[in-house]
Image (cartoon, rainbow, N blue to C red; front, side, top):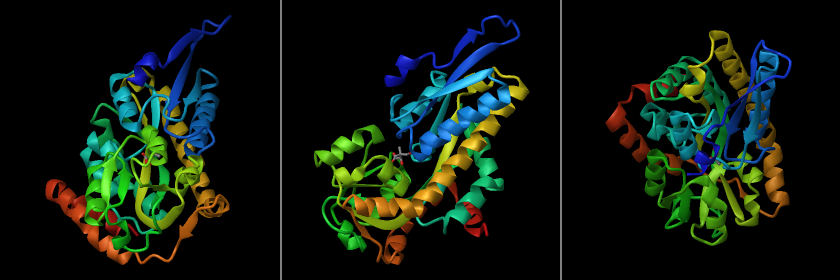
Length: 323
Ligand code: PAF
């Protein structure tokens, strides 16, 4: 696995002339480019950590899936071969089942609803659940509302999805929803996606505008339908092996750095909600906006059943009730 190359992600080096402390360098892994919303979030994390620690901690980003797909990176945190990872919740439900609830389609009404939920009591409870699974949940950040792109035809109704080979994340709630909506979901790690689209292994994919622009999917896809079918949260995670070795003060710096990361990432999501759509058009994509979401939402109810049959309805109802 790629991340074994980085088996000792954190390096400790004595600062010349100082016996007071050792400088520790941490690596932040993520799937996107250094200038994407994740890249800006990683930079903000590093800047805050360096500022609060007075240089005791420094950091670098390992962008673009250099350390593997998101699922690999989460495993890397559990075994301590990685330090910090910025990841969508897509694969996180495989490790922390309660998190699947956040990935239910058409659950969050808008960005305010999602951010209020994640910044409030429910978000804190879910971070605590993450901590019970050999991971440390530092903060909630954001990927954005997801939309469908494809190379075959404009998608306006569920019938247009019929038989479309659509790459999804490795998330059973998403797969269930897309099957119910008529597509043929194909789970795949993100680092394989661009080539799969280019070679026609899959016809389409779904991701927020942030990702579609950062990945230049216009090179391999000509239609984007603003379905907004699911909100995609991001978790800023750390390895318990790193965090358990820190003092309380040092741990505090990591939590503050993760909050700064989320602020920077959400600001970029906000910026791209408008500017990104213009960029997609400029690069030749047909942007489909006249979509009636109700029939998609109705079919996606199957995914709720799959989730609630196993984990109950309480969490979903509490999220729906957040004003
Ligand atoms: O589609 C995915 O796998 C995720 O949305 C991505 C692009 C890796 C960002 O977290």
